[in-house]
Length: 352
Ligand SMILES: Nc1ncnc2c1ncn2[C@@H]1O[C@H](COP(=O)(O)OP(=O)(O)OP(=O)(O)O)[C@@H](O)[C@H]1O
Ligand SMILES: [Mg+2]
Image (cartoon, rainbow, N blue to C red; front, top):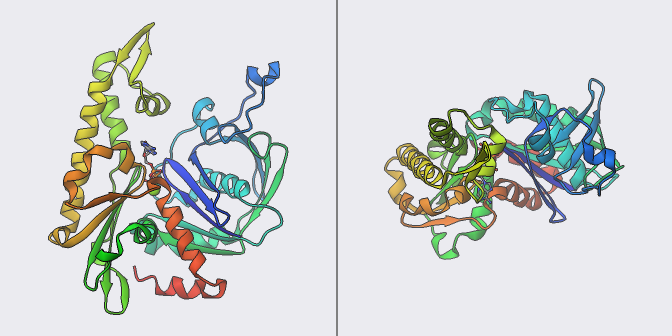
């Protein structure tokens, strides 16, 4: 089976070659046993209820994962570590999602992505780590309740974020634009990072323009910070990450001391400011090449979060059909086109 897992700083996106997709918050936290279980309430067998146990040579632990951790684990938070695969939480989320997308027993080729700028320095290490991974995941709850999955990968390929999404964008860009000499840009706006990629339709085929590819340390986390600061001015305290994420989904109000406070204006103002900052950084990074691009494709959850604010980035912007999973979808396109034996060749050719 071919499997892609894009472990983003805020959401982990998984797709398999059977067309199944999973998106869960990249969060892991301590478990507890809630009153629901004591009263024997109807069991939630969705992805919102992932209570798991992990076992390996070195680890034996129980966790809440994803939405359940976000909602109920006091110690759960997003990790901003530049070396995300050094975080034990990363391997736990990745294995939990892998288990949910596999049937047993299966030979698995895994592809995962890391931010473009860290690709060169971290790729070999991440591949090695994932090749050695051998976890047993037991699902106390969720879609695989009562089941065990043995997670290990036969082959592992690591690709850069943004570049993967570009392979998906190429499926959606009008054929008429794919002419010799044409340049295409892609902005993958995530939570902590925004990955920029440019491809050129060269004589010999598609070429990655490494000089125009970059990871910017800016994303939707700045939106959370900006809203948090504005709200603190009003209520005198900061909201935590769960309240902030809830606030971005309508209705834009928070209940404090029995009163609903509406923050629509603050949220909209912050969205304007952050969109402005991201667009400025993108224009600066691309310089004069920016005006030569035929189209700028938008990927990442940021393309939806700031949906109506991208129009002035470029005369021809296109939000991908499934922007949040664009890296995972694009990486799956790459895997599907390859025979297993050719994986190594692609790794050697990825000119980054
Ligand atoms: N359907 C949606 N509508 C509005 N906003 C969304 C939607 N989906 C995701 N987002 C927002 O986009 C943000 C970024 O999502 P994304 O999954 O692309 O980030 P990430 O990949 O985890 O981050 P990074 O790329 O920095 O690792 C999320 O934190 C969320 O606020
Ligand atoms: Mg991402």
